[in-house]
Length: 256
Image (cartoon, rainbow, N blue to C red):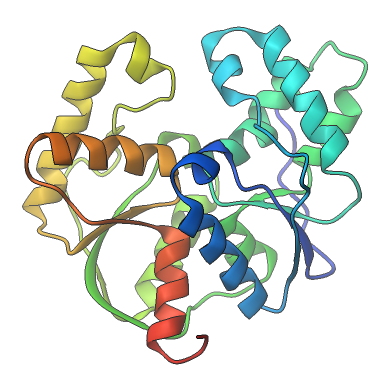
């Protein structure tokens, strides 16, 4: 049993969960997320004690360890403000994974309460704030990879709606768009050969579309695919979705 979708916010005061990957690899994506939210009139708080959503341990089957991390997250993200996450994967963990592993725990209501106000960034912009089009311009052909964890949610359609509305941006269609990139968090470590095969298949289809930029709402997928592309000797420029939204605003002279 999973938690219900997040409720539409009544104010533009939000809390931001930066995620482990933003902390370690995608600091500019976190910065871009703040700039995008502030452009939309949001006041952004960043709880300093935040660590991880608990997904690595959850995926590895160590639910006891994962629950300890989730309990810490619930303790840090107090209040009623929406929690905005620049990661479909981490959002999915708090929305679905955490309530599942707390099904028989006494503190499940607190976990469900956090799930009820957690949003992936694009989902929050489009379905939380009601922003259906994005201003500015981004002169490039962009290949959008929808992560597995964001399927079954509003995140993928929301991201595509925003990208498709940006002036001078062309969304590149490519084959096997639903194909997993092969990352899967601990899956890529446990089954590296299978993971690499899936990643190369994905890259072959993306390269065939000849995009200027590859993007996703998930840093893990970008890290996996861009690393494989570099190792192949055929790197692909990658930007997190938040960076494209921010750069479109900059290109349009809407923010500095």
